[in-house]
Image (cartoon, rainbow, N blue to C red; front, side, top):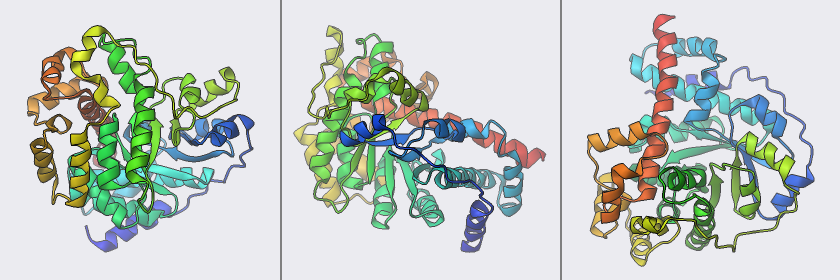
Length: 408
């Protein structure tokens, strides 16, 4: 795409945004969490719900393909999509769809930024996840629209690690997303050096519970706190140390159990429930080591890979940082040669189809023997399932765009 069209799109995104900045009041409940060491972000794209829960102690909102899709499906942007079509009409239809999806993410992100005055995490289209040039191009375009407030979310893939590294070198704020273990975030902190990385702890507990490997209690929490220690150690000497986000909180009790974690992304229901049920007297829990309720049988599937790292993984991450691969394929090959192949397994299209059909929480029985053999791992499956889930929601959004621009 030529630079003239990119500039026209930027001007269209920024035109006529009339959101009024809300006047947020201080809240001792949330200040207590801030005092314990935790930044507070709301995990929603719903402006009305965000306004009900926003307080002066909160600093950001985060969206993703699922959350933005929920807003688009309300129909509130249908007229805007039709206008956007006129700007990108010279592009092939499928390229128009991707561009309009970018425009919608950027526009909604700008409305959130104007209304709440904080940072906003904005997500890349899922079809960029394995394409270096697209990650860099769209990341820079988000940055050029709002360099102060936008934080670009890049998903955990081999190419994503390298694309986000390049964006950080160019000064773009990065929220590296869809991680489920300490060792994945070791790779992120060492190679990419983003501003933020994540543990989607709710899905870790759900995997254990839904697949009969235990109650799920403690698994996500232990992973978060272990990961934070590792990320701090690895990134402490970087110009901008990486901070850990406890993402995908499932219940208000986690607000207390994980106090002191660098950042929370809180669904509005979790935030509201916390205000109702907790006393607001928070103290840091970063030195806790929570027990994990697992069945005896679960041990053979190496659940400790979620919260522990090995010397081999540490050496690998440092080597990949020092001698950065030229592309994703080289990175994956080097991971396998280092004996860590379960972090980036070689999978068939049939395998990927099964992962997509399973939904956010993979069916353990389908993968059990391969996990036990070391070919796969729980964190890897959860990452792939998460990306597949986002892809499904992105398709739903894209389908709405396609319908409007082809039938309108």
